Length: 255
Image 1 (cartoon, rainbow, N blue to C red):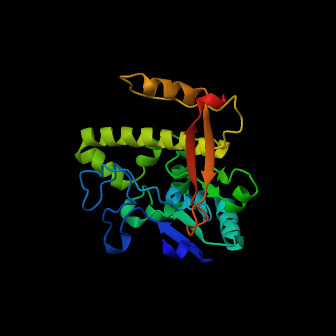
Image 2: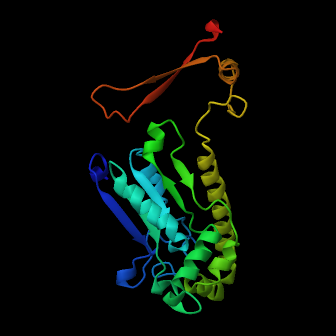
Image 3: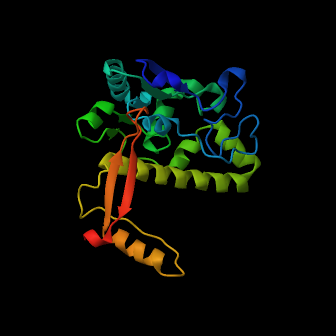
């Protein structure tokens, strides 16, 4: 992580979603529902979203790519190379340990298309220079789902084996994955629409939840909902310029 603070480095992660070189063991990159070594009964935890972790740095160029869209791969590589700062690209890479059907890695391109079209592997780019220009830095390159995620799961042995050996567990995990894919695509579309920008008051909304015995919390919550707060953004001395605090002051007398 320290290498991404200031260095101009380019990193490409070839994601096979398991420890491929040592026989296909479970890793933090393995998706929920996959039957692999050390998780033969199906992994229950979600896959770590490493791309969004690096997007929180804001100055790092980030992209999720796949051979399903080779033009997008090339575009991401060019943008990463031109970016004046660190870049981090994650590429979907079918592995022989995944048991791709029917022709193994001969079907790599088709497998990549199934992954993208079903939403299993979304394509996107995060461009820090757009943020500096006051624009939305997040670009979603695979907005429309063309297949159900079950069509993708039915092509790989790591999911098929779980369905054969533990059908009830598989059904629960596959339903969970389908929900996760839907929620993730909804989240990514929100990022692409720039939901963090509350410039349009007609579209901005905040839900205020509170518990109050004396009435004080209820009064403060109403004032907050009515906008009777002053927002002040400050930067701390001797701290990274990217770290910023947002302070809210309750000032009902000013409104």
